[in-house]
Length: 348
Image (tube, rainbow, N blue to C red):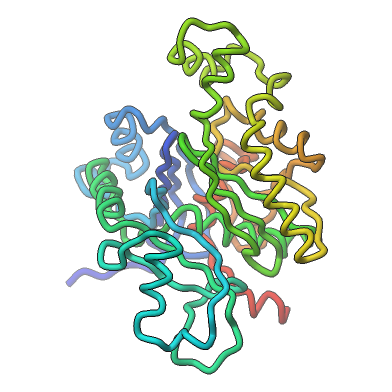
């Protein structure tokens, strides 16, 4: 008979458009020590698979790395919404919301409805005045593709989460830890769209998908630098050979209009002002974009102290771990390791 030690090592994997981020920990749950971190480009499957084998070690050679995983399917859903409490008990109400508001067919998707303040499941039959919820999920075919991608890389997803929602939950926790009084504008920039959120210590306040992503900046680069074609502009944009800082305002001009509209509406409705911006998934070569957005909006960039936040969650980095001062790109992976109880935190 096999038995499993409570001190069995834990493995965590996040896969996004640019990279695979991985961690090995001393145990599956906190308290734990992060023993190793790895970041590899996602474009070369052989490189990622080799990194997985190195993380597992020789003892488990040939076996799947059983992991808690965060993924970012193209049409992932993280949307806050105000429910019509008079209709929530109608059998077809939530199906109608999915179809009309999100254009998602319920039979082809996996969707959860969560309370926006603490991330717990929304209970339809419960008598409540809670009407602010977050719909979280994705298309079944894309979630299946994400699982198959992980398996092909030698990773068995014991738990599969939307990386977006895990990171947002981690950031709510961070607001409480750092005693941030003002809300944060969070941006996830993909190739063809930008997921925007406003987060505070009380939860996820606003969500909006903006049809402007990194690819929308390529024609601007081509025009401003007089390049012969978009492919040349794309290679230059994603390289680290040209300083685009002074061009930042032009590159984000269309995106900026959407963000100003979002922030303006939020500030009128709540009376709160956005104090900082956080871009969670930008590759290191595009790190200047977050500063460009903050500058144009007249706010600061949120500099995360992930090491001390993790310590508060009973998670420490081993002295040999690289990087010792992880930036915002690691928030999603670390958030897979944590569990945030909003009610307990507030009571404390």
